[in-house]
Image (tube, rainbow, N blue to C red):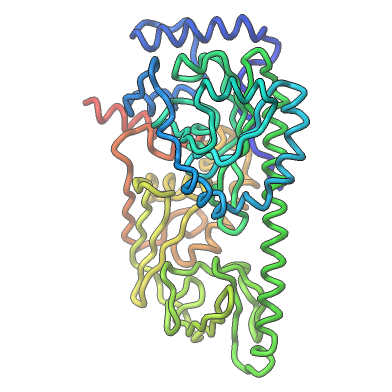
Length: 431
């Protein structure tokens, strides 16, 4: 399992009280148009730019109206995190009690679904609006650990005046997203929040470890679902003499007969019983199963794609659409694959592994990581990306849809190549 980067707030060896005072001077200078005495962390500076464009008032921002009890209960029941709540409480409540924190579990839209902690801390949380049913996106309350960690899709600690709104300057929060292991989507986040004086890097390490444990439990449930799907499909496969594949609703392979199965098949949205063109398999016959699909590949070479649309501007997560003579499909991308495809789109002549490593990590020596990611990307996007050098296949029409504002271009990315692209877009926008 890849360990996430832990974006803690207070530099090592620095006194938190002195650092909080420095941050308040930075906050005052930035908001008044003056020259700040120090630079913000890039993740915070980027967030402030997004927040200022959303016209959040640093003196009056409050969470959006609290959800009615019935609607809150509906979101709780629909959340995949509901079944994990006992584990989350067991993992975090001991620390919350001892260190004067509150524990928060939120959904992917930054809505607080559950909150727990010492009575005194719950009262303080009430005063700042951290109540069940409140919404803590950047657009609602400015930079905060919950909203910003989900915006950048990684664990994050926000301390004192790193919060955009002054009403949160006495608070420190650590948040870590929890992802669905089937598709990589953020299901929500777990958060520990408390007084600024309690700031400590281990808090972020704890919520990150708990989020990973939650993902591990979800992964185990997914494996159990694939086992059930194999059991359902076994009688059907015993009587079939042609190539056949059984996948779940997200395209993960449960079992196969007569063929070497891919680990995952990219399924188009709105897949229905009948004929369909599937990436890497070509024209197939598709039949529904309880919790999945039975796929009969038609055989022969899959037709080469003719068009790729990389959509980084949509309200939802970034996605790629591939079209060809037999149809097309749309796939939601991981952040790393978004970065790779965007970088390749800027260099149609191709990129070496060293160049991609420099653009992704600022280190041209990280060749093994780049080659592994490109191998995974090419398995997903058959006929779209070539190697030696890495590039989009010749003859493809490639369209990249980017957001209107530079700060919204892959905001979760800290890759040097993406940051340079944002700066170029910003300069072009200002003439």
